[in-house]
Length: 319
Ligand SMILES: [Zn+2]
Image (cartoon, rainbow, N blue to C red; front, side):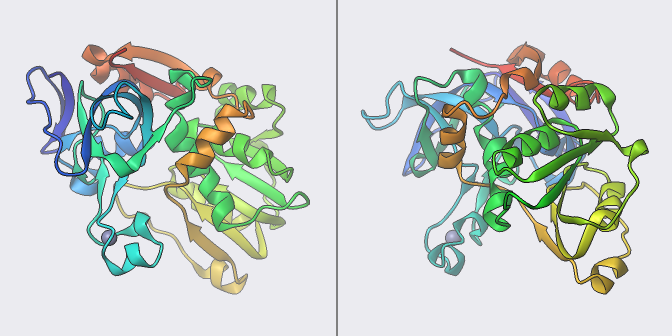
C-alpha cells in the first residue's frame, strides 16, 4: 500500500508498504480524508523520536471488522490504551502507562491506504457530517478539552494566542461558551478569517499587554507565546498550553510564582462531544481548509502545511 512514513528523522512516500494486520480487538480501516496538524510537522522534525506511518487526524471506512461496523464511516480516538494499569483504572485512560498513540508514539498512523486500530477507539460519524467536517473531530475534541479542564463562564475575559489552524479552532469552540473572547495573532490574513466568523481579533504588534485575562490559551507553537501569556494573565488566572515543541524552550517562570498563576497542559479531548458540536453546525471548519492533495502528493501537502499562509491542509486518501 501507499503510505507516508518517518524513519531516522526523514519523511518519505513508501510505494509498497505491507498492509497492517489487525491484532486482537482491532479493526482495519481505509482512511478517506486526513488532516495535517502542527504535531505532524514537529514529528517530521524529530519530536517524539517517532518511526512509522505519520498522521492522526482522519475519517475512515471500516473495511474489516465486526458486521455492525462494516462499511461505516468512523473517526478514531488516537490514544490506544491497556485498560488495566492504575491510570486506566482511575479514569485517566488517555494517560495510560502502556499507551500507544496513532501516528505519534509506537503505532502507525493514518497517512496510508490502510490502518489497524482498536475497535473500542471508534466513533461512528453521522450522515449529516461530511468527510470534510468529520476530519476535524480530533482537533475539535482537543479544543473542547480546554473547557473540560477549565470551566469557561460567560463573563470571563479570555484570550487565545495564535491565529493558525489550532488557534482559530480553539477560538471558535470557546466562543460557544459566551465568554468575552479575543484572538491574537501575527498573520493579518488568518485573523481576517476569524474576524469574518464574528470573533474579535487583534494583531500581536497592536496589543498592549495588560494582566487582566481570566484565561489565556497559547496555541502559537512559539516560546514567545508563553512569555506573552504570562503578561496577559491576571493574578490567580490560568494559562492553558496547547503547543508542543520538538526542542526544550527557555522560560523564566517567576511571573507565574509571583502572580500565583495556574498553568494547565492540555492535549486530547472527548471525540463524542466533538462530533456533537460539529453535527450541531456550531463551528465552521470547512472554510479552514486551504488545500487538499491526494496521498501520492502528501509530501507536497506537508510542505504546504508548514507555510504560514495555509490553515488546514488535507490529504485525500480513499472513498
Ligand atoms: Zn493503561
